[in-house]
Image (spheres, rainbow, N blue to C red):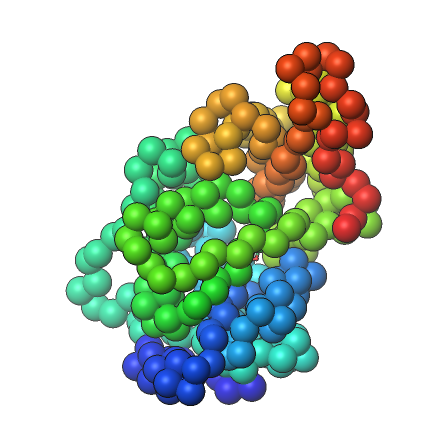
Length: 291
Ligand code: AMP
């Protein structure tokens, strides 16, 4: 595995790979790898010839400087994982290579970025995500880029951006990987105390309760389970997975457990019947067990 830190070198590497007819797969990450990242890397390994994992903790998408400061970083451990999974290039540019002095351009997707995560993390969050992902697409020139369903609104925003700006890249979305007790894996989970770690299962349990109450009152069922875990959510909503407007079949939740902000979501599928009350409960996608 080769580690590249300069943008010019990354672009030259991708040009050469492309000239040899190699299909480039990109897994954009902020590091602190867990099984969720590994699942994206496995998909990228299987689906491309030249596999690039980018590792960049993007300051532009953090609204809270303390959150940026506290974000877990361990490049050595991450590099070992990336190498084990067959990565060809670990692209780990320093912040000044991504945002040189005088950097001024922003890519944003208004509307789609405004609600839920956008509203709670601040208007700059998705603009920061879009700008860095657009830059990564120009630096790495991937044929396919791999993202996790765990960040469902991010997926919607990036798909829209790639379509609107004609990036010649296919966006692949992989299912959320969970701990055995249902908690969605996240680099932030290491910051939970043992007591918080237990309470954090309330997010996935609430989504599951909501999904099971699909023909009744899903949000009330979800709120009840969150309350049982002592969690007051920032939001719990049912939205369309593409527009992120209510109502829709994607149940999304965000909550702070202690100082750690967690998000999760589940897509419910109703049986194809006009009478929802008669829907087959097996039509509900379950949050548990871990796939
Ligand atoms: P991050 O390093 O947190 O920015 O995440 C990098 C990529 O991994 C993003 O596309 C995330 O959606 C994805 N990801 C994070 N957690 C999970 C998870 N538990 N399951 C699947 N994908 C994930």
